[in-house]
Image 1 (tube, rainbow, N blue to C red):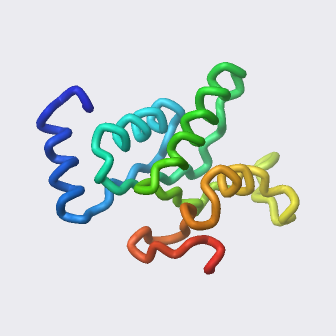
Image 2 (cartoon, rainbow, N blue to C red; image 1 turned 60 degrees about the vertical axis):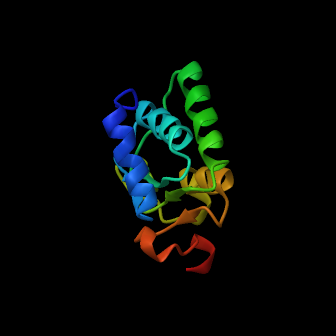
Length: 129
């Protein structure tokens, strides 16, 4: 889509209007696309949601996924919504705070000012909740 000038023009209009491009149901490929979008239209604020996404098990794919997340975290116009990132373990949602590694991993990459919960319009860092 980023090779389509009409699509990019639309993203620029979105940015000019002060609106947010919200991405959801991410996959490693879509995270890469979100990164390329943030670079192609730097003024376009973006919110990414990673509900229940399992990181790749292949080491090369996992490395690329982690690298893309670290790069996204460097873009001040990108927030990460951490709603629903806690992953089930053996079919159960963990309740032990020491077992919530997915949320901790993402929080460690994006930091408290770039992670939010609930509606992005509130722009409330997780640390404020």
